[in-house]
Image (cartoon, rainbow, N blue to C red; front, side, top):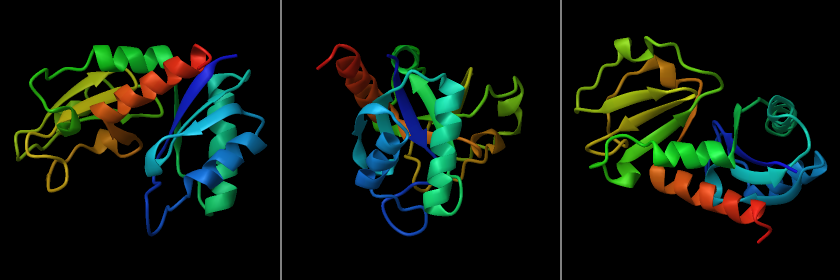
Length: 174
């Protein structure tokens, strides 16, 4: 049975969009997903399902919408995709916590970076359904403007590595 990693958009620790990870796990189990595991309080969940990726994504987003009052947006990937994202990460001199991977619901258009405004020297690279962004001064105070990032959700490279490791362990039956 395939292992999926779901990355939720618009979910945070406090305030609007707050979703306790125990509740996320319960929702996933209620959808019939098995071996459900969450990672940190920012909307990362791993599980097994026999359903197709698009079906899993839609069902989870719909269920979360019922709970949260609004669909947050769910991006689903498989372990091999995460392995590739980590292996192909550009900007080798970037600190892993300053390199964010934006997971998009679909492939970004080839000209997505043309409208980028990067006042602090941010760099970006398109890669299929992901956009890598290096924030040399961190993302917290960045004034980066890149409209293509809006429908996605980001995780720093350290988190993506951890999720890939967790998916590998789940696939290997640990």
